[in-house]
Length: 253
Length: 247
Image (cartoon, rainbow over all chains, first blue to last red):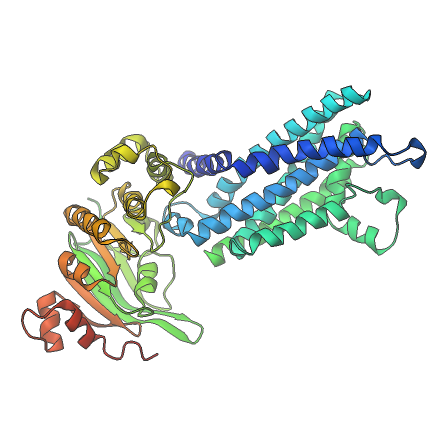
Protein backbone atom coordinates (compact mmCIF):
# COMPACT_ATOMS: atom_id res chain seq x y z
CA UNK A 1 0.00 0.00 0.00
CA UNK A 2 2.86 2.33 0.93
CA UNK A 3 4.61 1.60 -2.39
CA UNK A 4 1.37 2.20 -4.26
CA UNK A 5 0.89 5.59 -2.58
CA UNK A 6 4.50 6.45 -3.46
CA UNK A 7 3.81 5.80 -7.14
CA UNK A 8 0.48 7.65 -7.12
CA UNK A 9 2.04 10.65 -5.40
CA UNK A 10 4.85 10.73 -8.01
CA UNK A 11 2.31 10.86 -10.79
CA UNK A 12 0.11 13.36 -8.92
CA UNK A 13 3.16 15.59 -8.38
CA UNK A 14 3.78 15.60 -12.12
CA UNK A 15 0.12 16.54 -12.80
CA UNK A 16 0.31 19.33 -10.22
CA UNK A 17 3.50 20.70 -11.78
CA UNK A 18 1.92 20.62 -15.23
CA UNK A 19 -1.06 22.59 -13.88
CA UNK A 20 0.98 25.10 -11.92
CA UNK A 21 3.26 25.78 -14.90
CA UNK A 22 0.38 26.35 -17.30
CA UNK A 23 -0.65 30.04 -17.36
CA UNK A 24 -4.19 29.00 -18.34
CA UNK A 25 -4.62 27.52 -14.85
CA UNK A 26 -4.22 30.97 -13.33
CA UNK A 27 -6.35 32.72 -15.93
CA UNK A 28 -9.30 30.31 -15.90
CA UNK A 29 -9.15 28.60 -12.52
CA UNK A 30 -8.29 31.65 -10.41
CA UNK A 31 -8.61 34.85 -12.44
CA UNK A 32 -11.88 34.08 -14.20
CA UNK A 33 -14.03 33.49 -11.06
CA UNK A 34 -12.58 36.63 -9.57
CA UNK A 35 -13.52 38.74 -12.61
CA UNK A 36 -16.95 37.09 -12.77
CA UNK A 37 -17.64 38.02 -9.15
CA UNK A 38 -16.69 41.65 -9.69
CA UNK A 39 -18.60 42.03 -12.98
CA UNK A 40 -21.73 40.31 -11.65
CA UNK A 41 -21.65 42.44 -8.52
CA UNK A 42 -21.49 45.58 -10.66
CA UNK A 43 -24.42 44.21 -12.65
CA UNK A 44 -26.33 43.56 -9.45
CA UNK A 45 -25.70 47.12 -8.27
CA UNK A 46 -27.34 48.45 -11.44
CA UNK A 47 -30.53 46.39 -10.98
CA UNK A 48 -33.26 48.37 -9.15
CA UNK A 49 -34.40 46.80 -5.84
CA UNK A 50 -38.03 46.70 -6.98
CA UNK A 51 -36.98 44.07 -9.56
CA UNK A 52 -36.47 41.73 -6.58
CA UNK A 53 -33.68 39.96 -8.38
CA UNK A 54 -31.54 38.33 -5.73
CA UNK A 55 -29.59 35.88 -7.84
CA UNK A 56 -26.70 38.33 -8.23
CA UNK A 57 -26.56 39.17 -4.52
CA UNK A 58 -23.16 38.20 -3.20
CA UNK A 59 -24.45 35.38 -0.95
CA UNK A 60 -26.17 33.78 -3.94
CA UNK A 61 -23.51 34.72 -6.44
CA UNK A 62 -20.37 33.44 -4.69
CA UNK A 63 -21.36 29.72 -4.57
CA UNK A 64 -22.65 29.91 -8.15
CA UNK A 65 -19.43 31.44 -9.45
CA UNK A 66 -17.44 28.81 -7.56
CA UNK A 67 -19.36 25.96 -9.20
CA UNK A 68 -19.02 27.70 -12.56
CA UNK A 69 -15.26 27.97 -11.97
CA UNK A 70 -15.11 24.28 -11.12
CA UNK A 71 -16.48 23.47 -14.55
CA UNK A 72 -13.29 24.85 -16.07
CA UNK A 73 -11.31 22.23 -14.19
CA UNK A 74 -13.10 19.72 -16.38
CA UNK A 75 -11.57 21.44 -19.40
CA UNK A 76 -8.04 21.34 -17.90
CA UNK A 77 -8.39 17.70 -16.95
CA UNK A 78 -9.74 16.70 -20.36
CA UNK A 79 -6.92 18.55 -22.12
CA UNK A 80 -4.25 17.04 -19.89
CA UNK A 81 -5.47 13.45 -20.27
CA UNK A 82 -6.10 13.69 -24.02
CA UNK A 83 -2.66 15.24 -24.60
CA UNK A 84 -1.04 12.54 -22.49
CA UNK A 85 -2.76 9.97 -24.67
CA UNK A 86 -1.99 11.72 -27.97
CA UNK A 87 1.69 12.13 -27.13
CA UNK A 88 1.90 8.53 -25.89
CA UNK A 89 3.00 9.68 -22.43
CA UNK A 90 0.46 7.30 -20.91
CA UNK A 91 1.57 4.46 -23.18
CA UNK A 92 5.03 4.69 -21.65
CA UNK A 93 3.64 4.65 -18.13
CA UNK A 94 1.07 1.96 -18.79
CA UNK A 95 3.78 -0.67 -18.92
CA UNK A 96 4.79 0.43 -15.40
CA UNK A 97 3.44 -1.24 -12.24
CA UNK A 98 0.78 1.51 -11.91
CA UNK A 99 -2.83 0.38 -12.30
CA UNK A 100 -5.60 2.23 -14.16
CA UNK A 101 -7.12 3.22 -10.81
CA UNK A 102 -3.73 4.63 -9.75
CA UNK A 103 -3.72 6.87 -12.81
CA UNK A 104 -7.26 8.07 -12.11
CA UNK A 105 -6.24 8.97 -8.55
CA UNK A 106 -3.04 10.59 -9.81
CA UNK A 107 -5.02 12.90 -12.04
CA UNK A 108 -7.83 13.55 -9.55
CA UNK A 109 -5.90 14.49 -6.41
CA UNK A 110 -3.94 17.50 -7.77
CA UNK A 111 -6.95 18.90 -9.64
CA UNK A 112 -9.00 18.57 -6.45
CA UNK A 113 -6.33 20.56 -4.60
CA UNK A 114 -6.56 23.21 -7.31
CA UNK A 115 -10.36 23.19 -6.86
CA UNK A 116 -10.04 23.92 -3.14
CA UNK A 117 -7.53 26.69 -3.92
CA UNK A 118 -9.93 28.10 -6.47
CA UNK A 119 -12.75 28.00 -3.91
CA UNK A 120 -10.61 29.77 -1.32
CA UNK A 121 -9.80 32.58 -3.76
CA UNK A 122 -13.45 32.86 -4.80
CA UNK A 123 -14.68 33.00 -1.21
CA UNK A 124 -11.98 35.47 -0.13
CA UNK A 125 -12.90 37.76 -3.04
CA UNK A 126 -16.59 37.42 -2.21
CA UNK A 127 -15.81 38.33 1.41
CA UNK A 128 -14.00 41.47 0.23
CA UNK A 129 -16.85 42.41 -2.11
CA UNK A 130 -19.41 41.85 0.65
CA UNK A 131 -17.48 44.15 2.95
CA UNK A 132 -17.32 46.76 0.18
CA UNK A 133 -21.06 46.60 -0.61
CA UNK A 134 -22.11 46.59 3.03
CA UNK A 135 -23.21 42.95 3.07
CA UNK A 136 -21.70 40.28 5.26
CA UNK A 137 -20.65 36.69 4.73
CA UNK A 138 -20.18 34.16 7.49
CA UNK A 139 -16.60 32.74 7.41
CA UNK A 140 -17.91 29.40 8.73
CA UNK A 141 -20.40 29.33 5.87
CA UNK A 142 -17.63 30.07 3.41
CA UNK A 143 -15.63 27.12 4.73
CA UNK A 144 -18.77 24.99 4.50
CA UNK A 145 -19.14 25.92 0.81
CA UNK A 146 -15.68 24.47 0.15
CA UNK A 147 -16.58 21.27 1.97
CA UNK A 148 -19.96 20.66 0.32
CA UNK A 149 -18.54 21.48 -3.13
CA UNK A 150 -16.08 18.58 -3.07
CA UNK A 151 -18.55 16.21 -4.81
CA UNK A 152 -19.16 18.87 -7.48
CA UNK A 153 -15.42 19.30 -7.96
CA UNK A 154 -15.04 15.55 -8.35
CA UNK A 155 -17.96 15.53 -10.78
CA UNK A 156 -16.27 17.99 -13.13
CA UNK A 157 -12.89 16.29 -12.76
CA UNK A 158 -14.61 12.99 -13.59
CA UNK A 159 -16.17 14.49 -16.71
CA UNK A 160 -12.72 15.76 -17.68
CA UNK A 161 -11.18 12.31 -17.21
CA UNK A 162 -13.93 10.72 -19.26
CA UNK A 163 -13.70 13.21 -22.13
CA UNK A 164 -9.91 13.13 -22.05
CA UNK A 165 -9.75 9.37 -22.32
CA UNK A 166 -12.49 9.02 -24.93
CA UNK A 167 -11.71 11.95 -27.20
CA UNK A 168 -8.69 13.63 -28.78
CA UNK A 169 -7.21 16.93 -27.60
CA UNK A 170 -9.08 18.56 -30.52
CA UNK A 171 -12.50 17.12 -29.61
CA UNK A 172 -12.37 17.11 -25.80
CA UNK A 173 -12.31 20.94 -25.31
CA UNK A 174 -15.47 21.66 -27.37
CA UNK A 175 -17.29 18.86 -25.56
CA UNK A 176 -16.17 20.30 -22.24
CA UNK A 177 -17.51 23.69 -23.37
CA UNK A 178 -20.92 22.11 -23.95
CA UNK A 179 -20.98 20.85 -20.35
CA UNK A 180 -19.73 24.23 -19.09
CA UNK A 181 -22.62 25.94 -20.91
CA UNK A 182 -25.11 23.35 -19.68
CA UNK A 183 -23.95 23.75 -16.09
CA UNK A 184 -24.21 27.51 -16.43
CA UNK A 185 -27.73 27.58 -17.90
CA UNK A 186 -29.22 24.60 -16.09
CA UNK A 187 -27.50 25.20 -12.76
CA UNK A 188 -29.56 28.25 -11.79
CA UNK A 189 -26.41 30.26 -11.54
CA UNK A 190 -27.65 33.34 -13.32
CA UNK A 191 -31.42 32.91 -13.03
CA UNK A 192 -33.78 32.08 -10.19
CA UNK A 193 -35.15 28.64 -10.98
CA UNK A 194 -37.62 28.79 -8.08
CA UNK A 195 -39.76 31.19 -10.14
CA UNK A 196 -39.81 28.83 -13.11
CA UNK A 197 -41.59 25.59 -13.98
CA UNK A 198 -42.01 23.07 -16.77
CA UNK A 199 -39.66 20.77 -18.60
CA UNK A 200 -36.64 23.03 -18.14
CA UNK A 201 -36.89 22.89 -14.36
CA UNK A 202 -37.44 19.12 -14.47
CA UNK A 203 -34.26 18.85 -16.47
CA UNK A 204 -32.45 21.07 -13.98
CA UNK A 205 -33.64 18.80 -11.18
CA UNK A 206 -32.40 15.69 -12.96
CA UNK A 207 -28.97 17.08 -13.73
CA UNK A 208 -26.43 17.65 -10.95
CA UNK A 209 -25.54 21.29 -11.61
CA UNK A 210 -28.48 22.98 -9.86
CA UNK A 211 -27.98 20.75 -6.87
CA UNK A 212 -24.31 21.67 -6.67
CA UNK A 213 -25.18 25.38 -6.70
CA UNK A 214 -28.06 25.01 -4.22
CA UNK A 215 -25.86 23.00 -1.82
CA UNK A 216 -23.27 25.78 -1.94
CA UNK A 217 -25.85 28.48 -1.31
CA UNK A 218 -27.34 26.57 1.62
CA UNK A 219 -23.89 25.98 3.10
CA UNK A 220 -23.00 29.67 2.84
CA UNK A 221 -26.24 30.53 4.64
CA UNK A 222 -25.42 27.81 7.22
CA UNK A 223 -28.86 26.37 6.49
CA UNK A 224 -28.30 22.65 6.17
CA UNK A 225 -31.91 21.33 6.20
CA UNK A 226 -32.40 19.37 3.00
CA UNK A 227 -28.81 19.78 1.82
CA UNK A 228 -28.37 16.01 1.95
CA UNK A 229 -30.68 15.51 -1.03
CA UNK A 230 -28.66 17.95 -3.15
CA UNK A 231 -25.39 16.32 -2.16
CA UNK A 232 -26.82 12.86 -2.83
CA UNK A 233 -27.78 13.82 -6.40
CA UNK A 234 -24.35 15.34 -7.12
CA UNK A 235 -22.57 12.37 -5.52
CA UNK A 236 -24.63 9.88 -7.53
CA UNK A 237 -23.69 11.64 -10.76
CA UNK A 238 -20.06 11.78 -9.67
CA UNK A 239 -20.02 8.07 -8.92
CA UNK A 240 -21.65 7.32 -12.28
CA UNK A 241 -19.11 9.42 -14.18
CA UNK A 242 -16.17 7.72 -12.42
CA UNK A 243 -17.70 4.30 -12.98
CA UNK A 244 -17.74 5.12 -16.68
CA UNK A 245 -14.22 6.56 -16.61
CA UNK A 246 -12.56 3.47 -15.09
CA UNK A 247 -13.53 1.00 -17.86
CA UNK A 248 -12.91 3.73 -20.45
CA UNK A 249 -9.32 3.99 -19.16
CA UNK A 250 -8.99 0.21 -19.38
CA UNK A 251 -10.46 -0.03 -22.87
CA UNK A 252 -8.92 2.99 -24.56
CA UNK A 253 -5.45 2.66 -23.12
CA UNK B 1 19.52 -11.42 -11.67
CA UNK B 2 16.39 -13.28 -10.68
CA UNK B 3 15.01 -13.71 -14.19
CA UNK B 4 14.37 -17.28 -15.21
CA UNK B 5 15.63 -17.43 -18.78
CA UNK B 6 18.78 -16.76 -20.81
CA UNK B 7 16.53 -15.79 -23.68
CA UNK B 8 15.48 -12.17 -23.11
CA UNK B 9 12.42 -12.30 -25.35
CA UNK B 10 10.50 -15.22 -26.77
CA UNK B 11 7.61 -14.62 -29.17
CA UNK B 12 5.77 -17.81 -30.05
CA UNK B 13 3.05 -17.70 -32.68
CA UNK B 14 1.74 -14.27 -31.68
CA UNK B 15 -1.54 -13.31 -33.33
CA UNK B 16 -3.40 -10.02 -32.98
CA UNK B 17 -6.59 -9.14 -34.82
CA UNK B 18 -8.47 -5.85 -34.97
CA UNK B 19 -11.89 -6.88 -36.23
CA UNK B 20 -11.40 -8.63 -39.55
CA UNK B 21 -7.88 -7.26 -39.91
CA UNK B 22 -5.00 -9.44 -38.73
CA UNK B 23 -2.22 -7.08 -37.69
CA UNK B 24 0.13 -9.76 -36.35
CA UNK B 25 -0.11 -13.21 -37.84
CA UNK B 26 1.83 -15.95 -36.09
CA UNK B 27 4.98 -14.03 -35.21
CA UNK B 28 7.75 -16.08 -33.62
CA UNK B 29 11.32 -15.20 -32.73
CA UNK B 30 13.83 -15.34 -29.87
CA UNK B 31 16.04 -12.49 -28.74
CA UNK B 32 19.16 -13.38 -26.79
CA UNK B 33 20.27 -11.34 -23.83
CA UNK B 34 22.65 -8.46 -24.40
CA UNK B 35 21.90 -8.14 -28.10
CA UNK B 36 20.22 -5.52 -30.24
CA UNK B 37 17.39 -6.97 -32.29
CA UNK B 38 15.76 -4.96 -35.07
CA UNK B 39 12.25 -5.37 -36.42
CA UNK B 40 12.05 -4.09 -39.98
CA UNK B 41 9.04 -3.66 -42.19
CA UNK B 42 7.08 -1.21 -44.25
CA UNK B 43 4.27 0.84 -42.64
CA UNK B 44 1.54 -1.53 -41.46
CA UNK B 45 3.84 -4.55 -41.40
CA UNK B 46 2.96 -5.16 -37.74
CA UNK B 47 6.12 -3.91 -36.00
CA UNK B 48 4.46 -1.56 -33.50
CA UNK B 49 1.66 -4.04 -32.75
CA UNK B 50 4.31 -6.69 -32.05
CA UNK B 51 6.05 -4.30 -29.65
CA UNK B 52 2.72 -3.60 -27.95
CA UNK B 53 2.13 -7.32 -27.52
CA UNK B 54 5.59 -7.86 -26.08
CA UNK B 55 5.24 -4.94 -23.65
CA UNK B 56 1.80 -6.12 -22.50
CA UNK B 57 0.00 -3.05 -23.87
CA UNK B 58 -2.08 -5.41 -26.01
CA UNK B 59 -3.23 -8.94 -25.30
CA UNK B 60 -2.63 -11.48 -28.06
CA UNK B 61 -5.50 -13.34 -29.68
CA UNK B 62 -3.18 -16.28 -30.15
CA UNK B 63 0.28 -17.49 -29.17
CA UNK B 64 2.26 -16.15 -26.24
CA UNK B 65 5.31 -14.10 -25.41
CA UNK B 66 7.82 -14.14 -22.56
CA UNK B 67 10.21 -11.53 -21.21
CA UNK B 68 13.15 -13.15 -19.41
CA UNK B 69 10.95 -16.17 -18.79
CA UNK B 70 7.96 -14.25 -17.46
CA UNK B 71 4.70 -13.94 -19.40
CA UNK B 72 4.54 -10.65 -21.31
CA UNK B 73 2.10 -8.30 -19.58
CA UNK B 74 2.68 -9.82 -16.13
CA UNK B 75 3.85 -7.64 -13.25
CA UNK B 76 7.17 -9.51 -13.17
CA UNK B 77 7.75 -8.81 -16.86
CA UNK B 78 6.64 -5.17 -16.50
CA UNK B 79 9.39 -4.55 -13.95
CA UNK B 80 12.01 -5.78 -16.41
CA UNK B 81 11.14 -3.67 -19.43
CA UNK B 82 11.49 -0.08 -20.57
CA UNK B 83 9.80 1.55 -23.54
CA UNK B 84 10.49 4.56 -25.70
CA UNK B 85 7.38 4.86 -27.87
CA UNK B 86 7.21 6.19 -31.42
CA UNK B 87 6.00 9.54 -30.12
CA UNK B 88 8.34 11.57 -27.91
CA UNK B 89 6.14 10.94 -24.85
CA UNK B 90 7.67 13.18 -22.22
CA UNK B 91 5.92 15.54 -19.80
CA UNK B 92 6.35 18.86 -21.60
CA UNK B 93 6.16 21.19 -18.60
CA UNK B 94 8.60 19.12 -16.55
CA UNK B 95 12.34 19.54 -16.81
CA UNK B 96 14.64 16.79 -18.07
CA UNK B 97 15.58 15.90 -14.49
CA UNK B 98 11.98 15.99 -13.25
CA UNK B 99 10.85 13.69 -16.07
CA UNK B 100 13.50 11.15 -15.12
CA UNK B 101 12.80 11.38 -11.39
CA UNK B 102 9.06 10.97 -11.94
CA UNK B 103 9.58 7.87 -14.08
CA UNK B 104 11.88 6.27 -11.52
CA UNK B 105 9.45 7.03 -8.68
CA UNK B 106 6.53 5.54 -10.60
CA UNK B 107 8.51 2.29 -10.73
CA UNK B 108 8.90 2.57 -6.97
CA UNK B 109 12.58 3.55 -6.80
CA UNK B 110 13.44 5.60 -3.73
CA UNK B 111 16.81 6.68 -5.12
CA UNK B 112 15.08 8.41 -8.01
CA UNK B 113 17.14 11.61 -7.89
CA UNK B 114 20.46 9.72 -7.96
CA UNK B 115 19.23 7.56 -10.84
CA UNK B 116 18.10 10.66 -12.75
CA UNK B 117 21.49 12.32 -12.31
CA UNK B 118 23.24 9.16 -13.46
CA UNK B 119 21.14 8.98 -16.61
CA UNK B 120 21.62 12.70 -17.33
CA UNK B 121 25.37 12.04 -17.22
CA UNK B 122 25.10 9.01 -19.52
CA UNK B 123 22.88 10.93 -21.92
CA UNK B 124 25.31 13.86 -21.95
CA UNK B 125 22.44 16.18 -21.08
CA UNK B 126 23.93 17.94 -18.07
CA UNK B 127 23.49 21.42 -19.49
CA UNK B 128 19.83 20.69 -20.29
CA UNK B 129 18.90 19.05 -16.97
CA UNK B 130 16.86 22.06 -15.82
CA UNK B 131 15.22 22.72 -19.17
CA UNK B 132 11.55 21.89 -19.73
CA UNK B 133 11.26 19.03 -22.17
CA UNK B 134 8.92 20.99 -24.46
CA UNK B 135 11.79 23.41 -25.05
CA UNK B 136 14.24 20.70 -26.15
CA UNK B 137 15.17 20.01 -29.77
CA UNK B 138 13.75 16.88 -31.40
CA UNK B 139 17.00 14.98 -30.93
CA UNK B 140 17.30 15.87 -27.27
CA UNK B 141 13.67 14.96 -26.61
CA UNK B 142 14.29 11.56 -28.19
CA UNK B 143 17.33 11.13 -26.01
CA UNK B 144 15.30 12.05 -22.92
CA UNK B 145 12.59 9.63 -24.03
CA UNK B 146 15.16 6.83 -24.15
CA UNK B 147 16.55 8.01 -20.82
CA UNK B 148 13.08 7.64 -19.29
CA UNK B 149 13.09 4.11 -20.70
CA UNK B 150 16.36 3.17 -19.02
CA UNK B 151 16.20 5.11 -15.73
CA UNK B 152 14.57 2.05 -14.19
CA UNK B 153 17.49 -0.12 -15.35
CA UNK B 154 15.37 -2.48 -17.44
CA UNK B 155 16.69 -5.78 -18.74
CA UNK B 156 14.91 -5.22 -22.03
CA UNK B 157 14.37 -1.88 -23.76
CA UNK B 158 11.92 -1.41 -26.60
CA UNK B 159 12.67 1.48 -28.94
CA UNK B 160 9.92 2.16 -31.45
CA UNK B 161 11.44 4.17 -34.32
CA UNK B 162 13.69 6.22 -32.05
CA UNK B 163 15.31 8.24 -34.82
CA UNK B 164 12.13 9.04 -36.75
CA UNK B 165 12.17 12.67 -37.89
CA UNK B 166 15.68 13.39 -36.65
CA UNK B 167 18.32 15.09 -38.77
CA UNK B 168 21.48 13.21 -39.74
CA UNK B 169 23.60 14.62 -36.92
CA UNK B 170 21.03 13.91 -34.20
CA UNK B 171 20.54 10.42 -35.61
CA UNK B 172 24.27 9.65 -35.57
CA UNK B 173 24.55 10.94 -31.99
CA UNK B 174 21.74 8.62 -31.00
CA UNK B 175 23.43 5.69 -32.74
CA UNK B 176 26.54 6.27 -30.66
CA UNK B 177 24.41 6.24 -27.54
CA UNK B 178 22.61 3.06 -28.60
CA UNK B 179 25.95 1.35 -29.31
CA UNK B 180 26.94 2.08 -25.72
CA UNK B 181 23.54 1.15 -24.38
CA UNK B 182 23.37 -2.32 -25.90
CA UNK B 183 26.33 -3.37 -23.76
CA UNK B 184 24.12 -3.24 -20.68
CA UNK B 185 20.58 -3.98 -21.87
CA UNK B 186 18.82 -6.09 -24.49
CA UNK B 187 17.39 -3.72 -27.07
CA UNK B 188 14.52 -4.28 -29.48
CA UNK B 189 14.45 -1.63 -32.16
CA UNK B 190 11.93 -0.86 -34.88
CA UNK B 191 13.09 1.39 -37.65
CA UNK B 192 12.53 2.35 -41.28
CA UNK B 193 16.18 3.26 -41.73
CA UNK B 194 18.07 0.29 -43.19
CA UNK B 195 21.49 1.78 -42.57
CA UNK B 196 20.52 2.18 -38.92
CA UNK B 197 19.54 -1.46 -38.56
CA UNK B 198 22.66 -2.51 -40.44
CA UNK B 199 24.93 -0.44 -38.21
CA UNK B 200 23.42 -1.36 -34.86
CA UNK B 201 21.76 -4.80 -35.05
CA UNK B 202 23.09 -8.16 -33.96
CA UNK B 203 20.01 -9.82 -35.44
CA UNK B 204 17.19 -8.61 -37.65
CA UNK B 205 13.65 -9.77 -38.34
CA UNK B 206 11.93 -8.65 -41.53
CA UNK B 207 8.17 -8.35 -41.20
CA UNK B 208 5.54 -8.09 -43.92
CA UNK B 209 1.78 -8.57 -43.75
CA UNK B 210 2.00 -9.08 -39.99
CA UNK B 211 4.34 -12.07 -40.29
CA UNK B 212 8.09 -12.56 -39.92
CA UNK B 213 9.45 -13.30 -43.38
CA UNK B 214 12.96 -14.06 -42.15
CA UNK B 215 15.14 -13.44 -39.13
CA UNK B 216 18.79 -13.82 -38.25
CA UNK B 217 22.08 -12.02 -38.69
CA UNK B 218 22.58 -9.92 -41.80
CA UNK B 219 24.71 -12.69 -43.28
CA UNK B 220 21.91 -15.21 -42.64
CA UNK B 221 19.33 -12.89 -44.21
CA UNK B 222 21.55 -12.54 -47.28
CA UNK B 223 21.64 -16.31 -47.61
CA UNK B 224 17.89 -16.73 -47.10
CA UNK B 225 17.10 -14.02 -49.65
CA UNK B 226 19.61 -15.31 -52.17
CA UNK B 227 21.59 -12.07 -52.01
CA UNK B 228 25.27 -11.79 -52.73
CA UNK B 229 27.82 -11.51 -49.92
CA UNK B 230 28.28 -7.85 -49.02
CA UNK B 231 24.84 -6.90 -50.33
CA UNK B 232 23.39 -3.91 -48.47
CA UNK B 233 20.53 -4.59 -46.05
CA UNK B 234 18.20 -2.38 -48.08
CA UNK B 235 18.38 -4.74 -51.08
CA UNK B 236 18.09 -7.81 -48.86
CA UNK B 237 15.07 -6.26 -47.17
CA UNK B 238 13.37 -5.49 -50.48
CA UNK B 239 13.76 -9.09 -51.62
CA UNK B 240 12.43 -10.47 -48.36
CA UNK B 241 9.57 -8.02 -47.97
CA UNK B 242 8.44 -8.41 -51.57
CA UNK B 243 4.65 -8.32 -51.60
CA UNK B 244 4.61 -6.83 -48.11
CA UNK B 245 2.42 -3.94 -49.18
CA UNK B 246 -0.18 -6.03 -50.94
CA UNK B 247 -2.86 -5.92 -48.20
